[in-house]
Image 1: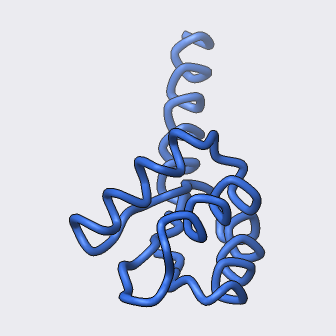
Image 2: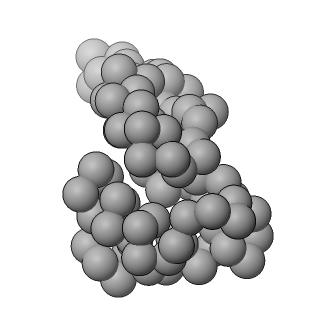
Length: 92
């Protein structure tokens, strides 16, 4: 009986964590080079170079790409840093 309550609480905790998660979204533009976007994702979002390149291509081909998941407090400084570099980004 007690084990069931613990399992239900664990499920609730995981669900709550998922609901609170946001995404850092990059948008395509006609200004920034692939190298600039890739280097920025590596430096700011701690992407591996291949991951950053893949995200840059997705942005280029689809118009946008979620490049990072997390809570707002964690993503906000990354978003601001990307915006400071002239890269279009939002947190959704």
